[in-house]
Length: 369
Image 1 (cartoon, rainbow, N blue to C red):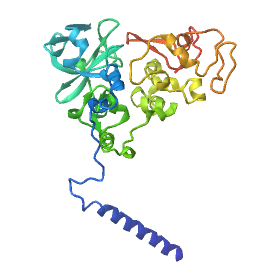
Image 2 (tube, rainbow, N blue to C red):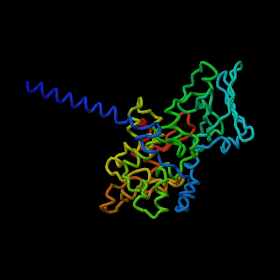
Image 3 (cartoon, rainbow, N blue to C red):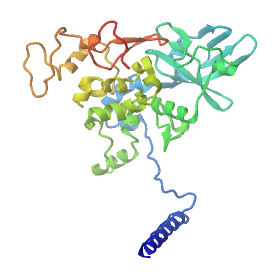
Image 4 (cartoon, helix red, strand yellow):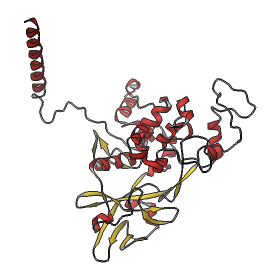
């Protein structure tokens, strides 16, 4: 009997809670929302007012030009006409004033649309986005710097398309479109909604540090306590790699879910690759920003990175210290990355990517997934 009474009381309490939850929002008008309004992105000029030197440096980096509208695209401006042939399909990108027209033909049918956005600065390649029947599409062909011309975009199977629309490119889903712009632009998304009207092309200060509205307002008011932004320099190696950089460059968690962990294509996903390095597992000081300046371009010289390796490893015949206690390389004295971070020729990319899985890379050894 007592058990039945207790059960009845529990059910009554649950029903009361449900009623409260159901009626809690009835007094809110449509203009009122329990979700706070997102902060506004103020743009580079607002950052430069106090951080002129570092902002000027960042604006010259490739990240700042990670995406450009077609009128500003240097590659398409300097390549007035690009052509590519695959079977019966002809692909052409032709400059017309400050626009570029993308035309695909199979000899009988043809589709011709203006390109809208250029993704990538062309260190390895550049891919294009256009609109067709109200949807965003990724071009089937991309520009590759090594060949100074067009070839299939990475990830496209070289099969025969079913029709001319499919031949031209692949329709992007809502999530894919949002993710592309979120990683290549600043301020284009809020609450996981895409808003291209507020987009600033390229990756700028607020893309990593967050919207600056409250920060700037607090600084102007002299309220430093409320002026805090993301202190990225205080993040450990794992947070930098997998949460900050990994959001766009593919974290280990994301790649683990891919079939065959993306195979050799995973060489492009640096956070995932470095996750498997022995030194990464042993010492969380290793992160992207330990070697790369997030406000500037990548340093190409192998010798430049020696000091980064020697921050943990000793040199030959050198005594270990508390900070530098990793053993010395028995064979090399300089250009550590040439041996321990080999460059991988990714098929179809016309580019060799540096493998961030730090290891003893033996010639002829299979690619480690």
